[in-house]
Length: 176
Length: 433
Picture 1 (cartoon, rainbow over the protein chains, first blue to last red):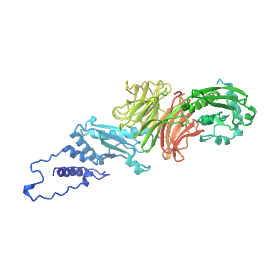
Picture 2: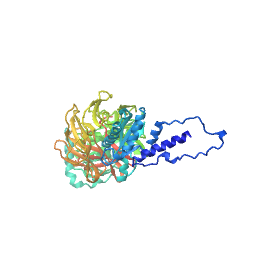
Picture 3: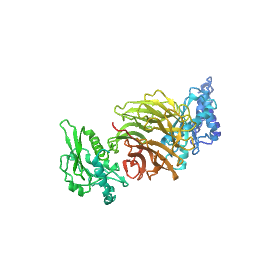
């Protein structure tokens, strides 16, 4: 019973956040786990669930679930601006980081494959720092988020066309 | 120039250039044991014969073939074929060698010593004048036979050109295969490679210390860019710069005491300098732009670097002591990866041309004139040989990643490492090891 409530509230939180974003590359893991229907107990004398236990609503767990599929920000060509469509993603992360000051994240900037390795490392850093700034502007502590860069070294997608490049110009938000 | 033989040899070489007509420059001796793929024809190439050394077949390394390939790759020699059976003790028939249009002849031998070492000897003759030009002996452990061959090539090169050869130097580069990254050290001919670091995470930007004993590089093994320094003989390594954000683009000062690098610890990618021990960190640039890829000029007082303060990335220079930066590259919208020749006169870099191709250029710093030296489209990371006569860079040729050496005028190019693995980030080591 407790689990079901948690999953339901997490699902609600996730779908709320999802509404405010247009980037949904993968289905949220919670969507695959529809709560099983518990058969109503008819035998009053042998209740199978506790009648006294109070379920805990853990906001931290909810907030983590809310960012489960909100971990990548994509950028336009030659751009380092966090687009408006990621406002919901940024706010969901900020909410979680502000709820728990102990959480530390890496913001990993990436570029497409074109150009020099060191210059691309700096360009990826610029993207990571743009995401860091959008978080710290709404209350996240600087020490909680470290912008770093992989430059062109870790492409998400192989390929040398615009479709691949667009998937590679990104910042991944990862828990440390 | 101190060697009078050189002048006569080069003059006669120039005389014969029309007769040679390039054809033999492109053909390879049938007895070459590994191929040097030379593209292009040099202006003045000295014709030299280096027949198989006596007892070389039992040595385990094709000593004379290594010497021939070295000389050929330098762009300053053309290999002349001829009869074998000579050693440093022979009395060559100069008439025959003149008939083959050789201006110089080097012959030698490989002998196993009682203590297990190999004694490699050679002697050089000026065929035109018919005189002995001296020789050398190198006693080495069998593992170092390649090194002995390179040292002989260096000795021949120096006797005939008056300049120091680079054949016994080393290069560092990075390969990627099956998701594994390897930092490799090879001889200057791309052979005899050894892995200094193997990692599941990317490795970029290797830089040699001026004494050739250690390499600084960027490794992502801790899921971020950290500058490491590794002692090549012991394998001992330490994190030199592991600050908040990214740490990258290390470059040693000419005296080896300081390292310039790019740090983002204060926001943005900016140039810093620190002592080789990691202390004394000082910020060099104060801009809102990207400043990266610093390299020292040989005088140690000037840094060349890449900045996009003017919009796109261009190469600038500034005093190490601080002060304003001056733009160096003006043609093209994207110029990166500077490398300065040891005499401080030439700047090699990568330029992006129309269609998104990246090519190696060389700029004469006094006149500002620029020459593209390649016709490939994926060139990366040019690096000067320590005598300033050659460049090494990474590119794609024939559908493969290769390391290429080229003369500064782009006329003589040779493929070094050709592999199915990604090969990148070559950097030529200093004299000595």
